[in-house]
Image 1 (cartoon, rainbow, N blue to C red):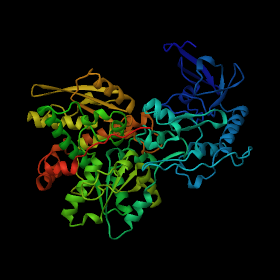
Image 2: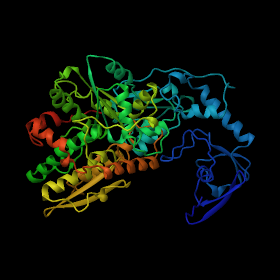
Image 3: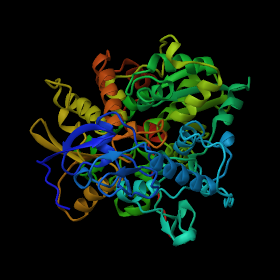
Length: 579
């Protein structure tokens, strides 16, 4: 069919006229006039597959049922979305899916957020016309971060699209045909043996409970109830602009104060801010960049804050591990400082320190268990919870985030700059680094601290900075498919960047695999805006101006990239085989 994007098409949907551009799907046109057509396999940011068939509508031209997600208004007469024929078809499709699905909603990690469960309730499915053909298969828990319960898989293909089309890792795919059709890894290898980087984008895409993060909430409850432990928590920048989703706040709402209050009421001894460690990261990473520029080090230097991205380099581009910054991520820097500097300052033995991280990321669960992340003399970070897990703990404690007072982070690891806050969005690490590097090298402030050239939603963003006559070229990208484009260009000698920021998840941490369901490009944009609002209102907007960071170096670390800083805040990487 020829589509002319400049042509407008008018059709009636349920008797209501709507005018939309040629090439608009029925699903999109219906949404324009407030009609929600149910879907399961459809996601606005993913390839249209029309696997589930739940979105069927009736067309007056053909008098047949057709799927709304992949049929255009150009090929339709009047469309009806709620006729007896349509409702019966949708109900039958849902019953067939449920006949091959476990009925264990009460114990399912997706209960209350499951799209299949929601549709079953909307269509009043109290009994099933079909006999159950469901067969239980063992859960796959062969890694520290992600659980696969393929008994619940409805074969919608969204996880495959996230892994292949969006991330380009191809760790999972379609297997077999007909009644044996399934989704899994090649030759059923464990995820750790594939190109999987544990980014969790498949989990975020899954409409049911087939994929989930490993639930570590009970480990945290146990620690909080242990009087012998001093339990501290750090919270990543992207969490504060996303957790409100689970409590009915507008998308992108900044819930920092009420979130801090909630965590205090959960029983944490101290509530700290990962943004503090982001400022620390800028001091170490910025100094490392300058050292490489001045002393002929490996260039381009590439950021190392995102554990999924680090996993990807170790598995797919091991020849480029030397390009990675040796800096630990802010999460791991915080853990090392909490169990050394803070523990000494408070007179607490490190074995009695228990550090919890709240992250928008599933790969962080793996990162904290890496064998080299123990420079404090113990595992630097004990447990990582996702944003979703924190929301679950808050609800189970009987707290309503929307009615809690605004409270401040504890010190000395709770004061942060606006530069630390924007770490949670694509381009934020680069912008934070440029703000401090420019001031340190030139000895003067930039005319505008907003380096807008590295902001935005483009796949790859480029900018340059004049540092006392030396031009530094930088690039920013997010999503591994885009990262691959950059790495292949570097390998081929087709670009001369000196510094590159890569975030594993599209859009950065605001779209992390541990964020509230469901995240779309539009929601990521609202979360980004929330982080920039935090930055604008911050007392300090450059990492090197954070007085607590200055005190940390004066009292404990010495100087950025010094001996003690390298001992606690830097790491190394290891090539990992893929079967």
